[in-house]
Image 1 (cartoon, helix red, strand yellow):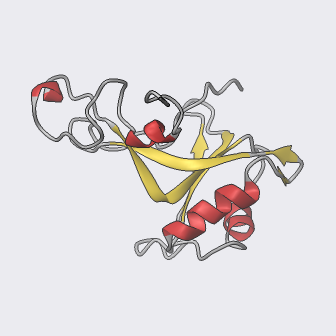
Image 2 (tube, rainbow, N blue to C red):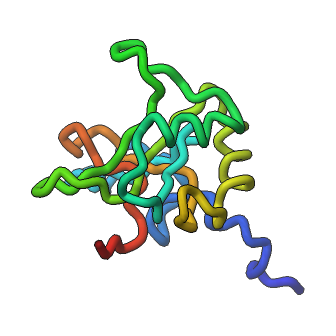
Length: 148
């Protein structure tokens, strides 16, 4: 009866198929530095934006739902705009970090699939590579294919 399927929350465990839940630190799959993806509960990944949108505009827009965290070093809102490594042009993708994980969740409910500066945007929780073995700056939230 109701044999294991459905339920719908087997996606929450995160890791690759067949791993035992999340966070099996150590153990046999450490070799090779897979750098599992960790969901950042206070950070959203936004894609599909107009490439001319500035970090300030993003901070203002997404700050309407909750307090965007301030970077202690730069004293600016924690908005990271993804740029093309060769051209330096914006890819129309960014992460926004909130003070409160509930604000990030609300931002997804509120902004996902909505219009922002003339583009329909996609909003989801950001992910980052587990820092060990990944050599620093991983591309947070890289999920879908990003055609120019």
